[in-house]
Image (cartoon, rainbow, N blue to C red):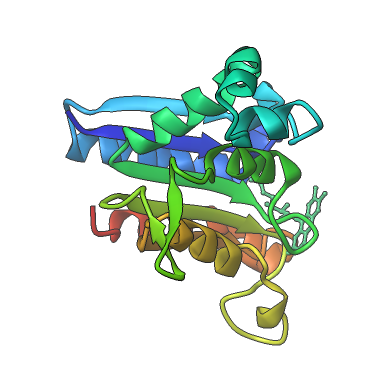
Amino acid sequence: MTQILMIEVSPRGKDSASRAVADMLAARLTDHYPSAKFVRRDLAAEHLPHLDEITLPAISTKDPAEAERLKEVAHQSDQLTDELLESDVLVIATPMWNFGIPSALKAWIDLVVRPGRTFQYSDGGVLGLAKGKKAILVLASGGVFTGGPWRSWDFVEPYLRQILGFIGIVDVQTVRAEGMNIPDLAADAVSRANKAVGELAL
Ligand SMILES: Cc1cc2nc3c(=O)[nH]c(=O)nc-3n(C[C@H](O)[C@H](O)[C@H](O)COP(=O)(O)O)c2cc1C
């Protein structure tokens, strides 16, 4: 059975452009994969831990005794990683904050990008282990980054494509609600993004 994993990040609820577009995408995905299992992770509600002096060894130790001792701590990362590996379609819907991703999304990434689980080094190279998935990025920003003078300030899409590629996810499409802080553009940014959702290759 197809599994769709949707990661939502914005804490702005009904005012969120990325969530509004993600809702439209969810409807299209459900239509396209009627029997799919839909898993939604709301990172604004979940408050995932940052890697700290306990979480980091719990998910990276090579000592079986230490791994056993810290197994409860590793549980959340194990679960999030299993969920990602079991999914066929990954949607990440996120705002741009300070030209990058919110720390809640970075916390999720730090919990799922794991040696031996989602990537491994081999023969001097890196092998992504989360292969064969489609990813769709739904990105909302106050400014415009697809062209113009601010383009090189976008550390959201390049970073997400790079880190997803690192774990083997290379089929990545992007939909943007951009110009949300520019009244002339904001007025129809979400409807333009919703139209782009209709044109995605699913
Ligand atoms: C803390 C914060 C930082 C932001 N930083 C940027 C930024 O660096 N560049 C930008 O274009 N917009 C920035 N914005 C505007 C948001 O990207 C914009 O409001 C977007 O619609 C947020 O997504 P959402 O509507 O899904 O919450 C920022 C907004 C907040 C609240």
